[in-house]
Length: 422
Image 1 (spheres, one colour):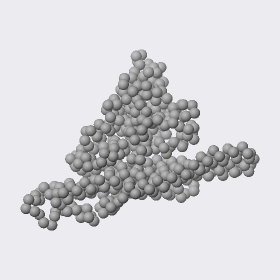
Image 2 (spheres, rainbow, N blue to C red):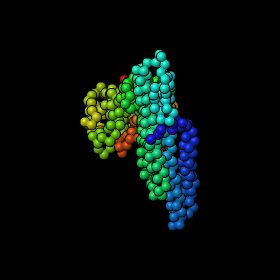
Image 3 (cartoon, helix red, strand yellow):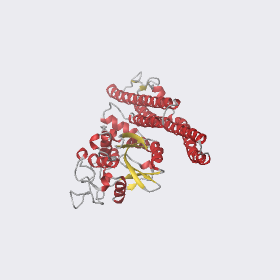
Image 4 (cartoon, helix red, strand yellow):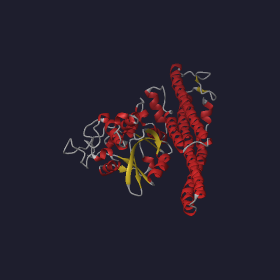
């Protein structure tokens, strides 16, 4: 349990030094891996093509794999610490606002425990009834801040223990390291989400929200969009920034649908890649994005300038190629349709929002081969996505990029913000 004194005295801004050291170690491992592949394995294969040469190549490849695994685990350790710093800063803001409210009303706050009480002597004009109301309100805010910091601290400790244990185990595979990274990205998101108030009245929630800095509000809007939308007391202007109705669909509804259905087998296109069908289904049936149908309805499949499944809703869809347009279920077509019908590429990483769409394109041939939905953004700018192919949630774009590059070659990742103009 984090104490009042520990939370108030914490200096989370200094923790970023440790985070940078961890990230630099991971980057060094990336360089080792690249150097081996680019300057070691191929030249050795060309110059020493016999049994002993192959053994030497095997050693190099094994070292490169271990370097890649270590790099993944370094990122898996850095993210929770970085996010904990933001979470604790947000909890400290809530704590200090509560303390200031108490003290400005003539109340005492115990510097060790955070207990709020009446002053030892009441003045002639003091109103004990009103002061007790402030005591209760300030105490709830202080307790909520301590609880948030405690939960975030426990999540970070759990994430670090798992990353450290995996790094110390020489048998840890790259796949296992990626699983750790995915779980830790989820824990990092939870660290931020745990700073949302628990058990406060709508009025106290509004007070909490208005007491946060614009940056703290922005961090929460990107990390916990659906949770904020469901929290009574969040102001309408914040809800609008999260939901973005001006785009012609509900970002929060899209994210909520994706988080609830990422592993729903009823959305499968049997035997085919479901990534883009899942993106379209989430936008349409979660976000309410209107379709753009063919003038030859219900035969949509050959209509290149539309975006529709022909009215076959969600899990009751028709098989691919029957009523859906090419842009509904094919990554390249989906990407091109949105960009030619009001959508824009989000070139500034700080402006990526949940509800946007991520596309992966192989640089060598320009083929856009994968799509997923942004369902969260960590305070450090790491984009968290959810997909239906190989059912996955809380994947990180940068964390999975080496895997895509290995499978498809160097990648160009684009985040697109769709906008309905039809």
